[in-house]
Image (cartoon, rainbow, N blue to C red; front, side, top):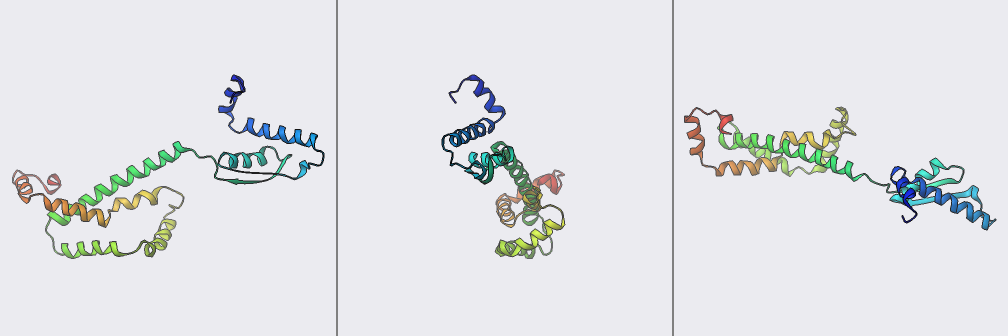
Length: 193
């Protein structure tokens, strides 16, 4: 910044190029001033933008930079936000839809074994994730989902015990007379739901 409009126009197109050129120019100027400086043994290190610059320096100018230690490369927050929004939206939609259907079935529809199965669903909350983690990873690996977003949002479409419990309690708080009146008017269970 402050070098003029030409420099300002070049930086957005090549973020690290001008900085790397400045580093190389500075090293060459130092070598001319101090002959004992050995340009055959120059390494670079950096963090964040410096990490990006360090890795790029070894790739673009191997004649000067022989080694690099790069940490925490520059991040693309637009990509992070897009990925977060995608996983969050798909997870929330899946969890709400599947858990609401299950909770409605547990609260409004009478069927044999309903309460026993609901206790089994609640019991799954007592299983620590560390017990499930390795088998779940093997399942995702077998399905070819490693390295994709699928393991982050697909399980939500099968409901969650806690969400089913909360929605079941909510549905139990709604008066049954409303569902009975809807059925008298010819509404199905899905319509009542």
